[in-house]
Length: 145
Image 1 (cartoon, rainbow, N blue to C red):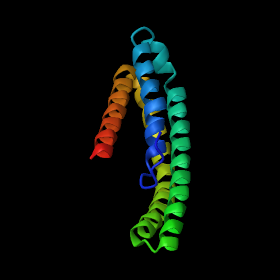
Image 2 (cartoon, helix red, strand yellow):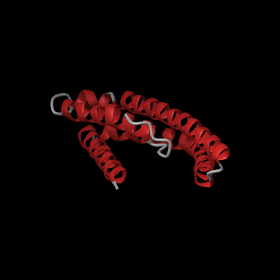
Image 3 (cartoon, rainbow, N blue to C red):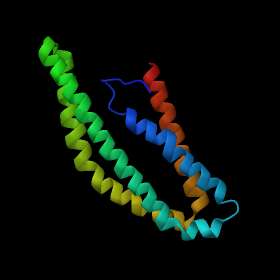
C-alpha cells in the first residue's frame, strides 16, 4: 500500500477490499446451502458489519488526523499554502465531519443490515458485495485519473 498524504480514504479502501467484500461474498455463497441458518444469523452479521464499520471510521479519523497534521506542518514550515490548506481541511473534515456523522450512520446501517439479512440474506449479501465491488472500482478509477 502506497502512503499518500493527500488521500484520507486509503485505510477505508483497504478495509473494504480485504474485509467487507470477501465477507459478503462468502455469505452470499453460504446462502445457497444454509439460507435459513444465515437468516437466523442476521443480527450477528449486522453486528459484525457494525463493529467493522466502527473500526473503519475510527481508522479513517486517525488517518485524517495524522495526514492532516503532517500536511499542515509541512505547509507551515515550507510556506506552501496548498499543503497548509489541504492539511487544515483534512483535520476539519476528517476528524470533525466523519466522527460526528459516522456514529448515527453506523447504528442505522447495523440495524438495516440485520433486518434485511433476516428477511432475504441471499439478496442482501449479493447487493452488499456488488456495492463494495462498485465502490472499489470507482476508487480505483479515481486514483488513476
